[in-house]
Amino acid sequence: MFFSKKEKKMGNKAPVSKNQELTVTIEDLTYQGMGVAKVEHYPLFIENALPTEKVMIHVLKAAKNYGFARVIKRLSTSDQRVELTEKHYLQTGIAPLQHLNYAAQLEFKRTQIVELLSKVHLENIQVAPTIGMDEPYHYRNKAQVPVRMVNGKLETGFFKKNSHIFVPLEDFFIQDKRIDEVIKSVRDILREFNIEPYDERQHSGVIRHIMVRRGYYTHDVMVVLVTRAKRLPMQDQIVAAIQAKCPDVRSLIQNVNQATTNVILGKQDKLLAGQNQIKDQLNGLTFNISPHSFYQVNPVQTEKLYQKVMAGAGLTGKETVIDAYCGIGTISLTLATKAAKVYGVEVVPEAVADAKLNAAANEIENTQFEIGTAEEWMQKWEEQGIKPDVIVVDPPRKGLAESLIESAVKMKPDKIIYVSCNPATLVRDLQLFLDQGFTVEQPIQPVDQFPQTVHVESVTVLKRKL
Image (cartoon, rainbow, N blue to C red; front, side, top):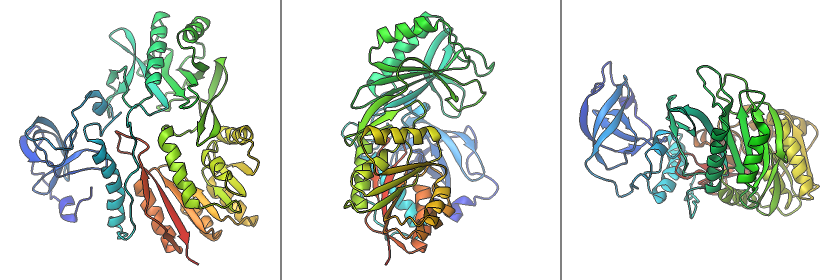
């Protein structure tokens, strides 16, 4: 959703005022999934409102160039609307698109990329239809759920968006159903032993979060109890109770986080029972997953995503490949099954250790993993005379550093495969690659890794002009 200069410069006074009630028609959706209505070109952002709907609204905020409002009454209903199963999923941001039917969600995600390309005059780059899921619910293999006291009772749930208001929840809608069950069981056990939940205002209490991971194919479960205190009261009894109630828990860990921070995990882990890791598979390869491992949360879609990476790379068994953000080696090892040699780099030492273990577990010997930044190692490899045929990048939301793009271009690979989780930084980085003599070889392929949310992953295949 983009605005013209006329729409941005509204003068000194908004045409609406706070607490005003009026009737509007929704024209568009923002990239955050909010409805947009305009009053004299002034945009109002409205949650739980879809294009074509006529709604009565109450203005919540009227800034100079835009405002926010809430729906009082819906006067007409979009044919793309799905009636809400639970309003808390919108309020907490767990499922901000759950009111939009799934076919429309997929098109919304494709359109995000199309509009961003258009904004920088790259309309000639095609964007394929988004690859979706047959069952776009209960897909997440990892949950990190805060624990708080509500009405004198320990509860698990989520916070309302932009607030400290805690909403108790039992069904999280997008999480593996077994994960939800395990969270409830652990919650009940913590209640039974009168474990005090975290109080962020006082920085007191014991248990901050419950983290649960589950292998999609193995069904192995990991439970991580994130505590403020170093000592977990009644530890032996709690461990025994969790093992008795949840026999599929293969790994039970206490993580200590004593910092006053929003970061969920601390640095100290203590194994309470079982193993330090659980296992799962992707495209037939086995991966060890530890509490701190980055591992894609939607295994069904991740397999499709990696298959698109493999198809784009077009490996024959002779190629040298660099995986510039290798994590625990999921993409590297997938590529290594069809490449001559794969070099991977990752800044997190634990992830590199996992990548090496995962290579050994799969009996893959044509990989080399290094600890450090992608920028640093790309330069080193270039100086060492390594000439990759394919470079794969899967950066965080901030995208690629210009120095990495420069190093990648200098190495003159035939192809660069860009796996993106943020269309805005993807389009920014594509412009730099295009300026350096690369072309987009085929339509950009969006993949819906996060149904019911606004996020979209994509695979772009860039080819060097000869």
